Image 1 (spheres, one colour):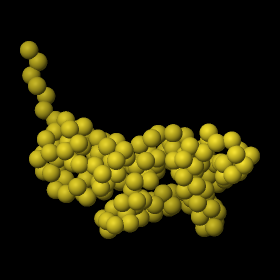
Image 2 (cartoon, rainbow, N blue to C red):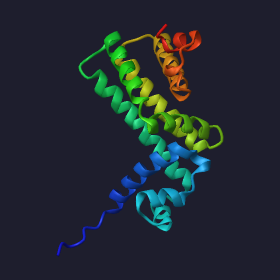
Image 3 (cartoon, rainbow, N blue to C red):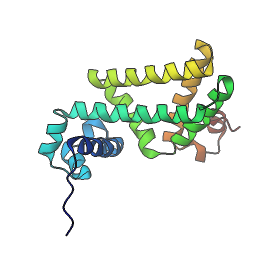
Length: 179
């Protein structure tokens, strides 16, 4: 008989954040009951609130995780590169990242939630600041070039959300950069 291995609070916390990323991406901050996240993580709702005293704190942890993944994607893409080549590699990696439903929806939901929740707003600001710093440092691009690069990324978010890659019309081809 194998003795049962108990997870540490930190392991449970990590599993909870991972579950929260997925569940919040699907239904957003306001549309997601904490009971649903607890169930997805395999813990009780009471334990969820021991790990994160408020739903907002859990959501901020999920938002932080999404930004950490985006930054890790940029770092992996730019490894050993600099300048315009790094910027292009990060852009390509970002397009690939948007194929991940949780990554795309997580971003869109975080932007929406930041309108009314100061803690979420601060998490999104912090995440963008970290992304900006890395992209600016590795790309050696001007502030205007970095702004344009991020603006293009935001456009890609919208195009991915509406499935524009499947629309064969001039506006979609132009905005997707394929026509």
